[in-house]
Length: 172
Ligand code: 2AM
Image (cartoon, rainbow, N blue to C red):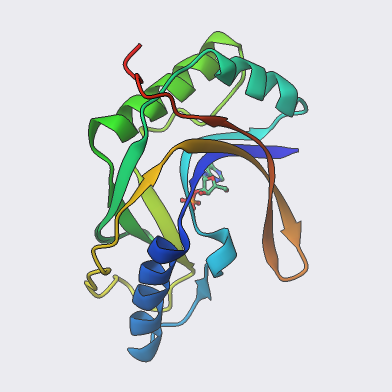
């Protein structure tokens, strides 16, 4: 199964990102807009791996502080358009710990440098994203979730398989 670790977003933050998608749509941009239920912030992409329990076990050892998140501009990787997020040292620290725990457990993951983003649109019909500022909605993430990703009839289907929670003293 195809696995990844991500932060779920609050309805308020999702709403702010849907507004950005709508502004682009109204400007004439087309492509595959990420549906609201699929918006998330990936910390580590594991890919094909048969043992979700081993992943959750590996993560039991880590601690992380609640992560403050707020939208931070938009950008693109080619025709994939995203919303940036800032989460300060709590976010980079959590991503680092998650990835270190996976590495120590021998669980493979995509080693590309962590670049916090929430994908809003794939196969954009226009070459670069018009700068739209998301409403400054912030949230605090206290959970990191293991998802399985399947290709559904109408797009990707993400299923939660388990999660780990923040501790107040995340600086171990
Ligand atoms: P993306 O939105 O930028 O494609 C599920 O595919 C999640 O894992 C998505 O958030 C996706 O990011 C992310 N991801 C990171 N590395 C990936 C990879 N090598 N292949 C597929 N998805 C990846």
